[in-house]
Length: 155
Image (cartoon, rainbow, N blue to C red; front, side):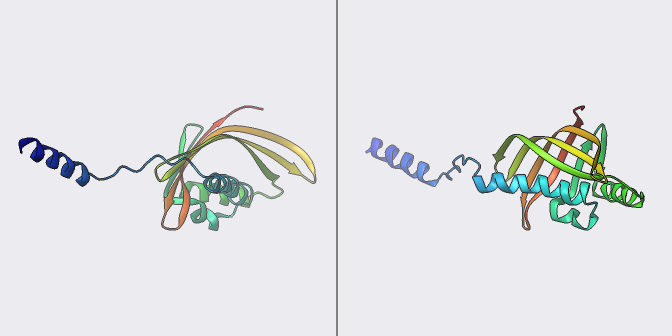
């Protein structure tokens, strides 16, 4: 009888424990969402200089660690305003080479190289390369960037 009570108690205890969510690898759809977030944010914000699209790509508390400085959405708006005030500014085109895209719970970590070409009148005037990382989080409005880090990677 004693062993029956112990066995029943053990069975009851095990059945009451919450099940842990199994690891689920990132899906191809989530990889594409992450790539679209990165490419779209650079095309619309940094190349297109459209500050009205910040909330499409960034959380309200977004920050980017940019060459030793901390930029938030307001600082990005200020940067865009200054760029728009410059006459005859070069056109920026961005291309990404992804190093890794991994999912951790409700967040996606993205590591990539960002290559930018700057042209004027169809002439290449400069190029730039950065090593960057980003953290995207799932929000009620879909996936958005919460944090980025950018390091100049030379020519």
